[in-house]
Image 1: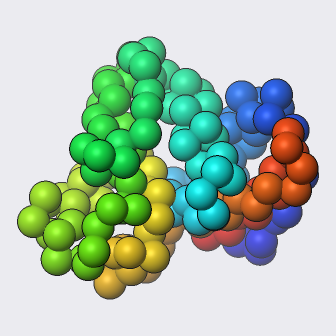
Image 2: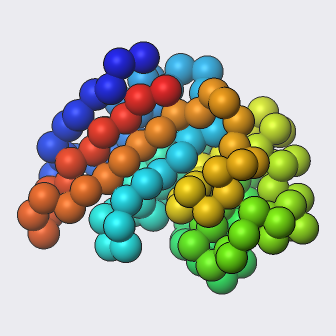
Length: 140
């Protein structure tokens, strides 16, 4: 899949989440890259809503992994690797099982666990352009 680049206003994120789901196709492991405050968690909240998650979503910075049930069945895993010091810590919490589960696994700060990531993943990069505008790049 060729790289695609969009400028997206924060109010457009609910609609853009559906664009990303269509673009990702069968990919279930998504890697979110971007600086602190770029909007990774906010975008993931909208993706979860588009996937039928009805429970509240929040950043798993301290829990590392949040599990959200989907209304249609199954779950979405939201992983935040920011606090991990090395990939071994991810192994200790069973991250490989989440990544290979076949459920959506949305991973923030994937560079911390690069050696554990599957070859086939959907990559979403966010960059703050203005207070309310994000440049969002994606590719498989």
